[in-house]
Amino acid sequence: MLNVKGLYTEYASDRGQPVKAAQDVSFDVPEGKLFTLLGPSGCGKTTTLRSIAGLERPVAGEITVEGHVVYSSAKKTFVPPNQRHFGMVFQSYAIWPHMNVFQNAAFPLQVRSQRPSEKEIREKVMRVLSAVGLEDLADRDATRLSGGQQQRLALARAIAMEPRILLLDEPLSNLDAKLREKMRFELKRLQSEFKLTTVYVTHDQSEALALSHQIAVMNEGRIVQVGTPREIYESPRNRFVADFVGTSNFIDASVRTSLSGAGHYQVSSVLGELEVRSVDTLAAGDKAVIAIRPEDVSLSDQKPANGQNICQGRVEAKVFLGECVDFQVRVGETLLLARAHPSLRTPVGESIHVAMNPEKCIAIPNTGSKA
Ligand SMILES: Nc1ncnc2c1ncn2[C@@H]1O[C@H](COP(=O)(O)OP(=O)(O)OP(=O)(O)O)[C@@H](O)[C@H]1O
Ligand SMILES: [Mg+2]
Image (cartoon, rainbow, N blue to C red):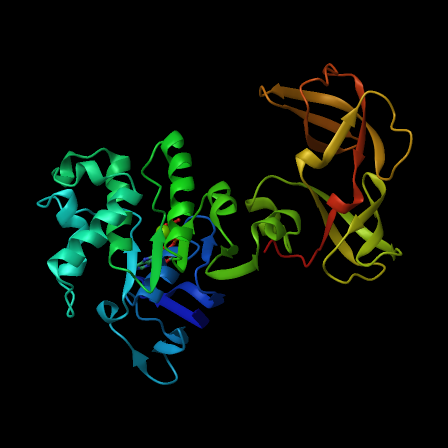
């Protein structure tokens, strides 16, 4: 449906050197799916989205929609933004203050070259307004809406124009935590109800995990991993992804030998010999870093009867969070973060047993760089 290939977008900077905002960005979004660009501030998410919309002119690459080229450096094609028929909600959403709610949502349809009849416009607009829960406010001045309602109106307006593709840049960023979570569900429902092919931009990993069919994690202008939310969370391919999406412990190790069972290895580490899993093929002697999530570090007062990757440590600190307790456990020189059930009451200073499921210990080849 949407294909982005080898996209480079740069900005002129005041000091001569161009800002390389998007570098060799490639991805495909299938029809009706929600694809997320996730990454820290300044990594090039908005730039990529604006390049798709035609609001930035890339320096190289190709963008096609349903097989039609909307941008190609090789073919010298650049379809202007208003002819791409994409709906967009910006990071700082803008509703038109001099119009009421209905007029805001109807405007893109009214200015269309093949303008639908008044009756059709009314039907389409009222359908999306009721989908976002604003049908009763259709006649209200748009400025007299709460922040969350304005955000929903911006979304309704983008959907009402029946875009070929919906581009959303942090559309929930201006909402408080509660409303943001509620809108997450609404967005997901709207997206699947209207079968909207969507590119979604966020720096919020839980939003990305909750909403997306696929996620591309970006760092410094480049995509560093593409996968389903589960793949990104459970099998990060590099240290940046393991660190940015959720929290991970990192343990330096070197590979000793491969084990029976594809992708399983024995490594020696500061915690002793460990059995780990890797998506990459590793060889004996390779340096690697083992990433393990705090919720996958199991703690117990009693020594586990059997199992792999067991060691002993001491509770250095703990924080009670209600539904769980975060423990800092020192094993030798290493400090491990572990998330445990509140029933575990081991006091600070006491010794504790640590077990790490080999399936959850992800070996990432240590290439020396942090990316
Ligand atoms: N108009 C511009 N002129 C020059 N540099 C720009 C311009 N817009 C963005 N940049 C730079 O390009 C890089 C990528 O910016 P971009 O807005 O794409 O980041 P982002 O991932 O959307 O970040 P955020 O999460 O903060 O919105 C940054 O280094 C930014 O400073
Ligand atoms: Mg941005």
